Length: 155
Image (cartoon, rainbow, N blue to C red; front, side):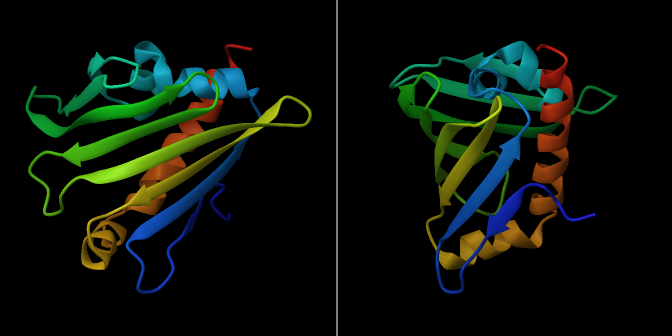
C-alpha cells in the first residue's frame, strides 16, 4: 500500500516538502500537534515541555523499557497561529545532523477533512540526505497513521 504521507525531496535542495491529508477537521488536526497528551499518544513519546506561543519552546523524550533515553529533541517556536500555522526549530540530541527549521501549515478541506503541509529546511543538502537515509519516511507515515486513528476517536 502506498504511504499516505507524501515526501518530496528534489535533487540538490536542502529541504523536504511533506503533505498528508487527514479525515479530520482542521481543528482536531491542529490539536494533535499542540495538546501534550495527544502528542504523547500518537508519537509514542513523553512531552517534557510544550509552550505553544511565539518564542515558546518544546522538548520531547522517548525512553525504552529500562528507562534509558533513546530519543530527545527540542526547539523554539517562532510563529504560532492557532488552527493555521506553527514555525519551529527541531534539533535532535546526539544526532549526526544539526537543527532544522520546520514550517507546519494546517488547511481545512471539504467534508471535515484537512491537510498538513510541512516544509523542512536543513543546513545543507548533505544533512537532508542523511535524514532521508534513516527510516524517516516510514516512521513519519506510521506516526501520521496513529494520529489519524487516535484523533478520529475524539470526534
